[in-house]
Each structure stands twice: as structure tokens, then as C-alpha cells.
Image (cartoon, rainbow over all chains, first blue to last red):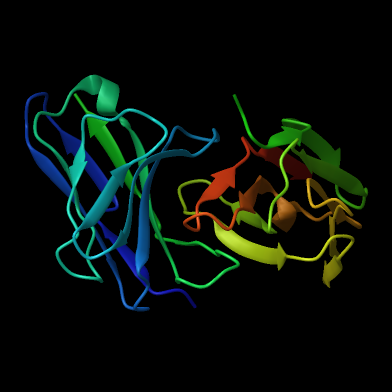
Amino acid sequence: EADIYQTPRYLVIGTGKKITLECSQTMGHDKMYWYQQDPGMELHLIHYSYGVNSTEKGDLSSESTVSRIRTEHFPLTLESARPSHTSQYLCASSATWVPTEAFFGQGTRLTVV
Amino acid sequence: TQLLEQSPQFLSIQEGENLTVYCNSSSVFSSLQWYRQEPGEGPVLLVTVVTGGEVKKLKRLTFQFGDARKDSSLHITAAQPGDTGLYLCAGGGSTLGRLYFGRGTQLTVWP
């Protein structure tokens, strides 16, 4: 059983608000990822990290930012939410060794009104 | 440009039927994973294949990695409604441990 947790599961928020989506894992994985996904659609990598103080932008341009101060914690922040940010956000982690196998959290369903 | 192409995109079948979904690429991968995702949840890893030509079985699911490690297939025998979900393939390269996901096959199995 993978131990990676996302909070909140659901969030409805007004335009212009600052939000932080939390992601924590207890597996000691160095690599962590944030994906954006619309229902039933493909995953888009928006941020990833290879370890503490390492963050990189993914394939899909995103107005969000991330930080990695602790190995187990990889929060995603939107400074000013907009309706176009409405989506599901999935956090994942993987161990350093190959093959890379990702373990996903349950996701945060964000709705910006 | 999608690195991994999955087909079909949608598949709707009756309980008891067999099916195969495909994951194809022009790139070579050191490993390939299959995940299943149910609505409102994160993807769950089903299997990892690493050797060209490798076949793995998970109950009624059979996974095959192509000889050239560019493609993979997932075959489900006697599908059940519980198999319904989005099936995603993901290729892993040796560089920095990135995973590249396909767009997925949405499978619906009707009772």
C-alpha cells in the first residue's frame, strides 16, 4: 500500500484567492511529481523534483509554483486562482532506482468560481 | 507530440468479452508500466515490464513488452464490470527517471 497523501480532496474557491495543495509521502522517495488532469483525460506533468531544494517545470506550462524543503513534502501553490485552473491535481512519488514506478495520491479536485 | 500512443482511446464491451489495448512508441524505453485509474482517484500501478519480449500475467490481465521495447499490449480475458477504468501506459527512460504517460484507454465493461 502506497503512502502518499493529498489534501484537500476537494476545494472550491473564488477567483483571485491564493491556494496551496498539500502532498506528503512517507516512503522516503527522492522524486516527486505534480500532474494536472481533466476528467478521463491524459496526465500533464507540471512540476517535478529530484530531491530537497530541487524543482523543475514539467511539460505543461503552469502558473503554479512548488517547493521541496523536506523530502516528504511537495506543496503546490497558486498565487491567484482563476477559473482556467479548475482541474484535478495529482501528486506522485518514486524511488531513485530504476525502473521508475510512480505511486499516486488520490488527487485534489480544484474548482475555481 | 505524444511520445506514447494508446489505442483505442475508448472501448465499450459486454461482460465476458476479451479485449486488447495497445501502447506504441517510436522510442525505446528501459521499462514500461501500466496503471489503472478509477474516476476521482489517482492511477494505481498494475505492472512493470523491463525486458524485451517479457510477458506478465496478473489474474485475467496479460501484459506484453515488445521485443524492441518500444511497445506494449494489455489483454484482458473475460472482462468484468470491475475492470472499468482508464488504463494508462507509461514509459521510463534511464535519464533522470522521468515517466512519459500515454493518453490512456477508457474501458467500460457493461454487465
